[in-house]
Every structure is written in structure tokens, then in C-alpha cells.
Image: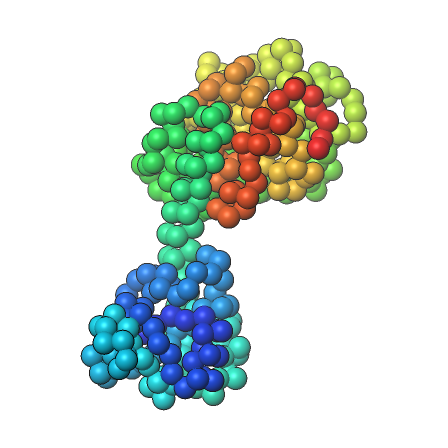
Length: 339
């Protein structure tokens, strides 16, 4: 049973050093008794969150004794000295990397730790992205203070962004946002396949797809005559008063609400921005202009969710590296020229 074993998670480079030197000195807390949760992966040196290939589980067996392995020179219960000969077996984090470990000439376990690894990815990714989100949105100064300070909402937004299909009610994320994210990839794939990416038609077709998502018939809805004919993606100027009136006619009494269904206008803006940032040219000026329009001309609360969902789609290290506050305030003249 895994619960009866002493285990330590190391990197491949550590394992190589362990073999070449014949022993490894290690903090005692890195050796865990039993494998019952994903915290074992956190005890390896700092690696990318999703780097399963570089992590190796070392099994020291059920008879390993921390007391007998105390480092003889440091006289400190927190430091162990473990000989290579004390290793009973090793295991990859996920089965597909088993063959990489054959060079160590150690018994390789047939364990499948995929479920624990998935738990690690979700738990740690959500935590790190939430912390990055708080920092970035706080510096941005665009979202309301109450929104940014609500840790439960930010955490739920991040989890929805990572695993939209796994969430269950109740949730602090409005139902419409969850529905939109669950169906985002399918809608964008259809729009790209039908040739609407980087075309003004993307707006009208997005609206029609969201109407269907809400369980209704768009009835031949078109915006082409209300959007400038050009060979580029639609921009915030295309949400003219006339275009918005046409969208609102399909929206019902609360065109910005995400509580029960997907807001047509906010759903369309989200799809446009996500497509631009992850499949397009990353035109930040265009993105920020649309966000400002959503915030100051449509609905401030839903614009907060919109901004947070877009930011939460980036891994934490990438989000921190984007320096969004600098980008945001350098693209504040209202023009659409890409930089």
C-alpha cells in the first residue's frame, strides 16, 4: 500500500546527482509517510507547475527510518543523509514517462498517480493564478476594489477558467459566464472553420451562436449592414447605437445579465477578445478599448468579470510577465492601431 511507504519527490537532475554521489542530503520534511494527497509534489524543488516529466517519486520502502538517516555531521533532526542503496524503487508521476527512468537501473513501480497529479495541477494552478490575478488587477486599477478584494469570487473565476465543465452549483460565478466558458472552444472552432476569424462577420455570427446557446432561434439575425465592410476583425466602434439596438432586441429585458443566460453583447465581446489574445495578433490596444467600452458604456460589474476571465486564462507566470498595467495605460488614446 502506498500509505505504508516513505516517499520523496525529486527532480531527475537530483536523482542523477544522488546516483553519482552515492547519497543525498535532504530536508527531513521532504520525506513523507504514505501518499495520500498531492502535497508530495509540492515538496520537490520549484519547477513549472505542470512539469510531470521532471518529477520522480522515490520509494524508500516501509522500513525506512528518519531517525537512523539523520545526517551525522549536522546534528540536526531536520537534515537527512540517504544512501542510493536505500532506494527501493522509483515511479514517474504519470505512466507515459516510465521509459525515461529505465536508465537509472532501479525497479520502476507500476503506480498510476494521474489522479493525484491532476489534483495537484488544479489546486496549485488555481492558487497561483488567483494570487497573480489579485496582484495584476490591483495594479491595473480598472476593476472595482470590492471585486478584487473578494477572494472567493476570484478563486471561483480562476477555477471556472481552468475547468469550466467540472463545476457544480452553487457557485459565485454567474451561470451565464459558466455556460459561455463551457461552450467557448466549440463556438470559436465553428467560427474559424466557417471563415469568420479576422472578419467583421465574427460579431453577428457570435451573437447568433450565443442565442442558440441560450436555447432560442436567432431567426436569421444579421449585423453585416450595420458593421463597416472591411477585411479585419470587428472593433469597439462597430458596437454602434444601431448595432446595439439590434442586439438588445434579441436580449430581453436585461441585456447585460449573466445570472441565468449568456448576455449577447458581453458574450460576443468575450469571444472576440479571447480569440484575439489566444488565436489572433494580440492587439492590446483593440482589447483595452473594448474593455473600456464594456466598463464605462455597458455594465461595470460584468466588465469586471470579463476582465478577470480573460486574465485568468493566462498561466500565472505569463500573466505576471505581461505587465498589463504598463500596456493598459500606454494604449489609452482610443485609436485602434496595433503596437
